[in-house]
Length: 68
Image (cartoon, rainbow, N blue to C red; front, top):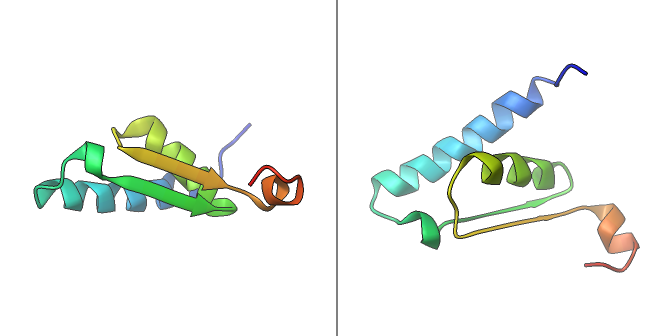
């Protein structure tokens, strides 16, 4: 299965933002990523590649099912 360009572009941008925070002296354990719907996937992909203090992803399916 071929990944969409989104799987490379958006997570890279988000990871770069986390990197900027690190450059400014904010430790990884004090950095978090939050995403809803498509952003939840970005959150998952960034958390898989970067050390973070927290990562929270949600989707409408989870909200509709009563999990959120």
